[in-house]
Every structure is written in C-alpha cells, then in structure tokens.
Image (spheres, rainbow, N blue to C red):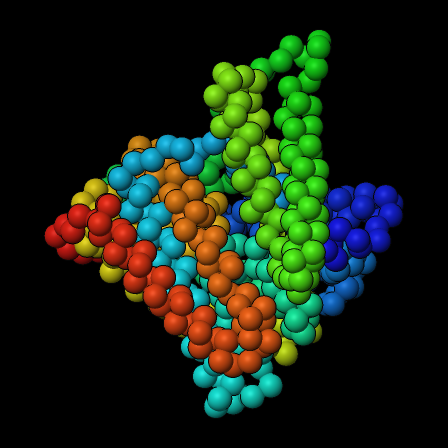
Length: 463
C-alpha cells in the first residue's frame, strides 16, 4: 500500500506532470524531425522516458525529479489504464485469429518465465549465490506484460526482502521496448525485402504521417459527442467515471485486505495491493456489461475511451523509464542482460515456429505483431504490423488487440503463482523450483486447451 500512503504535495505533483509533459512534447518534436526515430518508429513516450532518464538525477542531473514519485505514478496509472481498457468492452469480441494469438501470448509469457528463472537460478548456483532468483520472474512481466505490471509486482516484493524488484522490473521493460522496436523493425524490413509481407513490397513505403507521427491531411475523427456540451462536457463524464471506478477499486481492495487480515493472512496483503489493477479492470468490465444489459452503454464513446487510455499509457511509459534506478540496474546488470538476451532469442524462435505452422493467412504480419507485443507492449506490436501492412487492410491489427483480452484472462494465474516463493516458501530456493514446475504444467495445460478448442495445424509457411 506504499503508493497510496506516499506523501506528495500538490506542487510536486504539478511539477512532475509538467516535466513529463514537456519531455513528451520534446519526444513529439524529435519524432517529427529526426530520421533515426522515424526509421525505427520510436514513439514519443519512449523518447520522453529515455530523455528523462538521461537528464534526470542519476546521470546529468539537469532535471530534479524523484524516482520514487515516478514509481508511484506508474502504480496508479497502471490501474487507471486497465479501467480504460475494461470500459471499452472489446474483450467480448473474438475471431479465430485472435484466439490463436491470445494462446500464443500466454504460452510465450510462460516460456519467458521459465527462461528467466533458469537463467537467474543458474547464476545463483554458478556465479553469485547472493542473487535473488525472483529477478528471473520479472522477465515475463517486463517483456510480456509491460512496465506498469513489472513495477507494481516487483515493488510489492519489497515487503519480502527484495527492495530492488520494482527497479529491475522497469529496467527489463525498458530493454524490452528497445528489443521490440530495433530488432522488430529490422525483422520487418528484412521480411519485406524477401517478399514475405502479403500487402507491401517495398521496405520504405510508409506514409509521412506514420513516419513523423504528425497528421497533416484529413485527420481522422477521434471521438463522438454522447452528451450535449451545453449540459456537460462528454470528456468530463468519461474522466469522472474512470475516477469513480478507481475509488471503487481502492475501497474494494481495502475491504479484501481487511478480510485477509481477519483470516490471519496479513502477509498476503502486500500482494493484494499489487493486484489492484486486476480489480480495477474487473470492476470496469463488469460496469460496461451492466450498462450494456440495461441499454445505457451508448453514453460511453469508444473514441473518448481510446484517447483517455492513450494519454494514460503515454504518461505511464514515460514515467516508468524515468523511474529506473541506474544504480540498481548496474548491480544486476549481468543477470538482466543475460536473461533479456536469452529471453529475446527464445521469444523470437518460439513465436516464429508457431506462426509458420498455425496461420494460413498473413503469417508474417501476425509473427511480427505478436513478437513486438511480447517484447514491448500492444503499441509496439501494432507499430510493427503497420510497417508490414501500411493501410491495415488485413485483420491482423484487430486480432492483435482482441487477443489481449484472452491473454489477460489466462495470464492472471501466472501473476499469482510468481508470488509463491515469497508467500508460501519464505524466499527459499525450493519455492522457485515449485514455481517452475507449476509454470511448466500450466504451459502444458494451455497448449492442450488450445489444441482442444482452437488449434488447427496448417502447412508450414516459411518466412
């Protein structure tokens, strides 16, 4: 509950918002005018985050912000983002392509967990017995689930004697972004040159808006007015609803925490608070279902929800990189780099192998999309798809978005399991072995479930 009790003045909050906002504007300008960022489609939020990291207190010291406060913002922005996702209600839609991609995502999570554990446990036995093996479990959180979850779960381990967890999770996530964009763009361009992309034959056919990030001609409509501005600003209603749901998340989490304490399970309370984003998502999704049932969901506009969620994600990603402690990252540099390198290779090989054998339509586009998402976020996956499919004429982008709901549902048990070494084994090495066994069994279960309900083997489509 540290993030809820962190002392913060209004002046500090406004200063931090201004700093992150200024860096985001600088990121927009750099994307607009610097060819390097255009070539690799680096988003403004990523540019802003790394600029803040360089200019911040641990390097140049030109910007005097608090790493701890940035971590607090990451914690809260994560839940607010999940509320925005839940209100959109997109998880109710499905297609066979989305089903396949969702199963591939969750199986990649599990493979990354096994790789991370194997690498760090190997280093514990062979190199440094003082390493905390839990660092290995941050690989799937940082690569597959993003910086918000990596920080929130990692930071909750502070209560169990691993105070570096949040910072390491953010570092892994930052490396994942670099992997997604730099290796991802290289893979896409190579695939296009070799003729693997179905809808584009030249590697440099992106329109100016996609390259620079600035729309100049015929900008698309961002949202629809579901209320008359004379009565109430529609954006106000959407923001107020998200705020009320977050208040409900806080109340529900406190209620559950009191129940755990009364049941003699007070040691589980820190883990519960780290899962607040799951409760937030469920509350939002439940409210959307309730509104649909009573036919009042027309007051919610998908455009507004997408824009609000996008704003939250931009600030979340920038703040998550700015919150990285370079001192802690340096102390764990060897394990971090090794597990990220091995994790990248395994992620690439596994996704490519499956995509070649499962998809008969747009296998290359699906491969690069899921590869980008499983090393970065959904945004990086969509950016790579956009290079291979400039007009988004294929169903891949839509399937990638819809598949996230399937992966989220199957990913929740993993978030519980990775806490077992602390909550059930007191940090003993035995606990990590048990977790590895559970993850392996869950991987087999998910694969069998996939074969039973969705998998149809196709001929190999080489790329």
